[in-house]
Length: 155
Image (cartoon, rainbow, N blue to C red):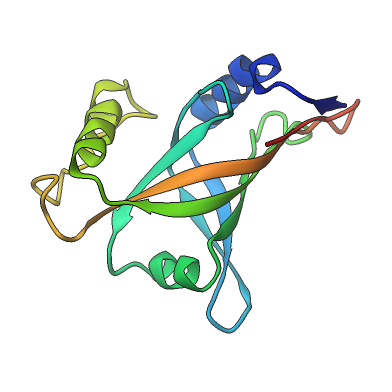
C-alpha cells in the first residue's frame, strides 16, 4: 500500500526504528561495490518526512563512500519478528553547522538508552574536528509485512 502523507506512518516508523535502535546500512564504495555496516541513527519526524542523524568520525570509511555516492539503504530487523522489516532508502549529507551538531549531541544524550547515549564520550566536545554528523534524508520508507501488504512512503 502506497502512503502519500508521511504523517500516516510517522508514529509507526519512529516506534519501529527507535525500538530496534541499530540498523544494517549499505553504501557503495569507490569501486562501485556494496559495503554493509551497522549504524545507530536517531530520527526526527517532520511534516515533509523524517530526518535521521548518525554520529561518526571524519576519517571513517563511510565518509569516502558517501563522497563517491551519497545514497544509502538501511534495514531494521526485529529478531523476534523478522517478517516485518523496516527499510529506509536515503541520501546522506554532512551537517557542518556547529549549532545543529550541538543540538543533535543533546538529542542523543537526552534520549534514554539504548537509543540515546553520550555521543561525545571519546571526542570531548562538539568542536573536535574528528566529530562528523551525518544527516539521513529518506526518499523511500517501507514498513514491510511478509504476511500482508507493506506500507510504502515516497518523498
